[in-house]
Image (cartoon, rainbow, N blue to C red):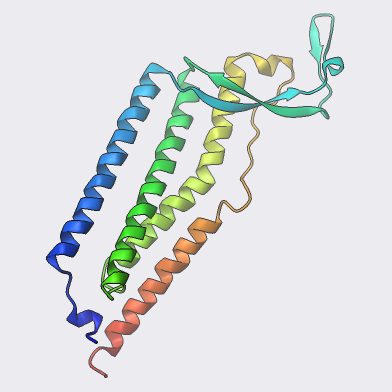
Length: 205
């Protein structure tokens, strides 16, 4: 069986990979255009978590001040339409991060499938694509919850809820959010090590 070094990338490989790359770029471009349109027009119909009291009898008015015990809060969702820029920008950045990460992973899966099917998984560039996908996935996992928290805080302030004892900035990272980027980093490391070992052992067999 010929080695990876004896199996150069065929013209069909280049065409297929180029096609998927262009389709991914077009999808990302459409996502960016759609996000910018929503950003400019302020029509983000996205549910934003806002912490509100759960018991009716826990909310009462006294001398014009709303008193809410801090121990009985739950999370409700409000849909913000015509939101201010302080709400739109974090939401737009979160959408772009998630879209970029998903597209990078799709491109990586296609390239890996194509090269494994051709028995050439260690060709140059595969590890780079895996590393880019890992970095984008890592950024999306860390920054998306923070951006949503900032958007929720801005929405809370814009609606004037902070004057009634509502929480301003609260965000949480979902469990397992770092599993995908960690696996992608390990895959990129394995591909890099494999490519180096293959390069070092060429001609020994």
